[in-house]
Amino acid sequence: MANSLSPNEVYQRCLALLSQREHSQHELRQKMLRHGVSEALVEATLKRLQADGYQSDARFVESFVRSRLNKRHGGRKIAYELQQRGISAAHAKAEIGKYDDEQLANAQTLIVRKAPRGDINTLFTDFKLKEKVTRSLVNKGYDFDTIRSAFTHLQDEL
Image (tube, rainbow, N blue to C red; front, side):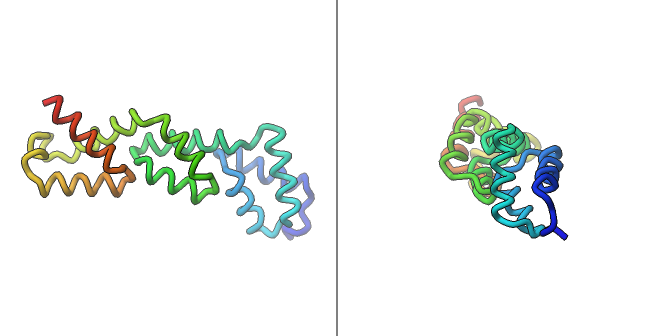
């Protein structure tokens, strides 16, 4: 059935996907190929979508980074997820780098939330607890420099 889709039908399917959220070219390509659409037709459709302004990897990256930062994910995790979606490491790093201050603030917020009963001083006296919080932040995708800076800023505020 998918092989009999006209170019316009493939275009409409892609528009339907893009109306729900931004997609990278890689994501759209994979979805259309999974439905049995020929590679040549997929490439032509992607070029048309880009020319018409409906698909933009730059817009996708910006939207994706913002949504993940709002969930307090770290830069390393976001970069990995973008690479899984066909975005180059350089493009991902450039966009994520625009939000270094927000990442630091997010890391500080997460550290404060992890402090027992909101007592931040405990984190600086209990090495095991600090290690546990650090591991938690690493799992969220924060790099050690950001984590160290977040702890330093919190300690300076005390």
